[in-house]
Length: 221
Image 1 (cartoon, rainbow, N blue to C red):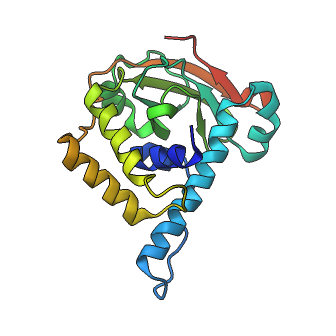
Image 2: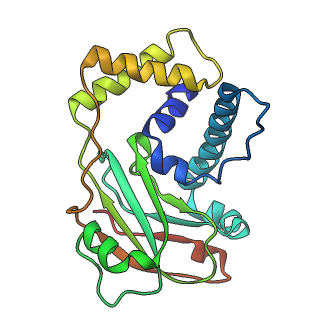
């Protein structure tokens, strides 16, 4: 799959993919808004590519790098056909895991350390939590079912519109225009899933000085 499609997919699915990135750089009031937006988008795409590489590499080969960055990689065992997955890192060990995402947010919201949403082709890959100190945590994961035919058609059409002029630098305005045009053509506007009633799986994670402690995995769902 072309690199431009990978970048487009990441931005189209936005929220949690960008939550895995650092905070945006400060803006200069003299810099044109479109230029700032495109620069941030390119920076995010670069960071996302680096996270993808860490997430998809052989675990043993990236343990030292994860430790050096203070990152934690968790393979949630998400089904390969899932459309979105939500990963939550909680402080401490739980005596009883919440049954649903709604229960987690209601009863354990104050213990959430990190939360990342992955979508599209990224949904089934391991998540990488940033800035995780040594300690005991609980990692929880929830996933939706496969994307429906309407959503797949929308994404394919948006990608085709964006890539019609061939490879090019990321352009925020053109991305938005491609999505709007695809929605107009297909008549479909994606809805955010209702995560509340979806079931959760959780496991204890202990991070210590050993690089290999920065890698954890659930059993496949």
